[in-house]
Length: 314
Image 1 (cartoon, rainbow, N blue to C red):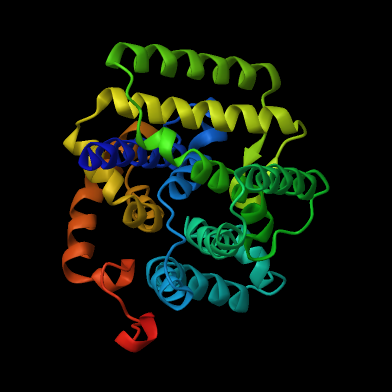
Image 2 (image 1 turned 60 degrees about the vertical axis):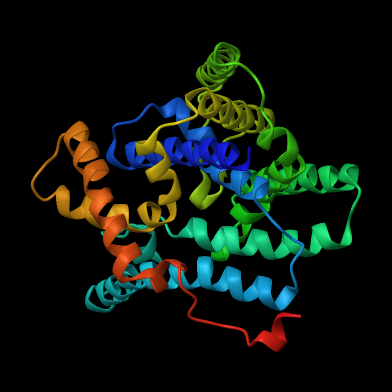
C-alpha cells in the first residue's frame, strides 16, 4: 500500500516538473502557472515529518535543501557579481534580477525556510483548526505583501505565501495518501477541476509569478486556481498510477529544478523553437540526473556533507 502511495506522489511531482520545463522554455499554457509551484509546496507538506529531533531535522534539511541551493546558485552568483563589476551603472541586485543565467533554486531556499517554521508550528500546535487558521493567515499576509509590492528579500514573502500550501498539504496528508477512487472517477474529477481552474483563470487573467511573490490583485482567484490545479494533478496522478518515465522525473525533480535553466541556456545557442528546446531539455535531463546521482550525490543531499554524531541524534 505504501509503495502505491509513493508511486502516484512521484507521478504528481513528475507532471509538475515537466510543467516547469514547459514554462521555462515557452512550450506552456499560461493557465497552468497558478498551480505549478504550489503543487510542490503542497506535496512537501503531505510528506513532511516533524517527529524527529530538532538537531537531526536541521542537519537533514541543510544537507537536502540549503546546501544544494548554495551549490547550484553559485555559478549564477559569480556570473552576476562579475557582470555588475564590469558594467558601470549596473548594481549586483539588478544583475541578479535580469540575469543572463537565470536559476530556479529559489524554491529550495523557500522550502528550507517554510520547513523550519512548520517544524515549530507542528511541534507546538496539535489542533488542526489552529493550524488551518495559521495557513489562512499566512496566505492573507503573503497576498498583502504582494499587493503592496513589498520587497521580497531572501524570498521571505514567497515563503509566507507558500507556507499556506505546505500546511494545507500537511493537514490533508491522510486524504492524499489514501485516495481510493476508480480510474474513471479520478479522470472525471481531475477534468472538472482543471476546467474550473481554466475558466477562473480566463475570467481574471491573473499575473502570477511566485519567485517574486507577484500574485495579481484577487486573493480568491490565486487560492482557487492554486488548489484546484494541485488537487487535479494529484487525482490525475492516481489515475495514471504507474508510469516509469513520470516516476523517474518525479524522483529526480530536485535535480531537474536546479540544473535545467543552465542547460536551457546552452540549448538556446543553437535552437529557438520552444518545442525543440523543451523536447531536448526533457531528454537531456535523464543523463544529467543519472550522472549527478552517481558521481555527485553530495550536491543534492543524497549523501550528507554535514553529519551528526550518534550521541547528538537523541
